Image (cartoon, rainbow, N blue to C red; front, side, top):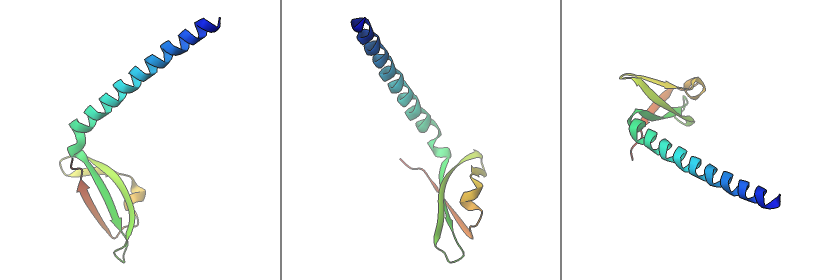
Amino acid sequence: MLIRLSISVLVLSSFALTSSTNAESGTVELFRKYKSSVVVVLAFDKNGLPSAIGSGFYFEDDLIATDAHVIQEASKVVLRTVRR
């Protein structure tokens, strides 16, 4: 019984490693495909001090989606595109 359990664990571990590698590869491909749509959102308060940082993405040529809490108290918002 112990030998069967060890073999099963080895097979499951190998499957998990392969699945993880495939998922990572897929993530890298998604990043390469859509990185030009991703922005870093920097928010500043009324004194010009950084107040929040977040991310966002273009979903139309001139519209960006981000979390409301990142920009809600901001006096100024700066967007930076991801370059790599």
